[in-house]
Length: 207
View (tube, rainbow, N blue to C red):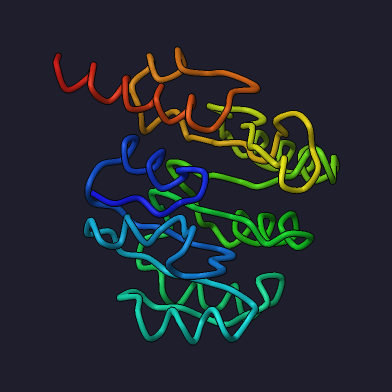
């Protein structure tokens, strides 16, 4: 299987959930290069893609199998789309990265009744600490648990001399075995997080 996610978020979701699932790609950007759900779609997942930039959605409509929407994810229109296109409000994976709109978007997703088994949420702690704090408040209040906190990324091309915390990777523990929490970590490079999940997946298949 081919994975496209720049920081392997799709690989994280795939090895947690499996070859079939439902995704929401909120802030899909380029629908192929570096995309967090293209590989999942190729594996057989279904889902919805969202972005506010017409060029990305025009491209998605041409080359992606699943529905895509050009929409402001802080608007009532976004809520309407979720309500009209999700037969089941429980989705397997949410990729959420809409920059400064991420907190308002997250709040709308939760209040619309959408729930998830796993999520990658970009908070860019190194740049905007409030997104980290507010997202954690919202998701913990709604019963979610951080599996990998402050996942690290190499931003040396932007002048950072050390790895920087850019995302939290969340789960709803009721959809996984209790020992999933043995993986809980903070401040790991994204590759290390993915390797932990792959090892967990392999160990459980051997049982």
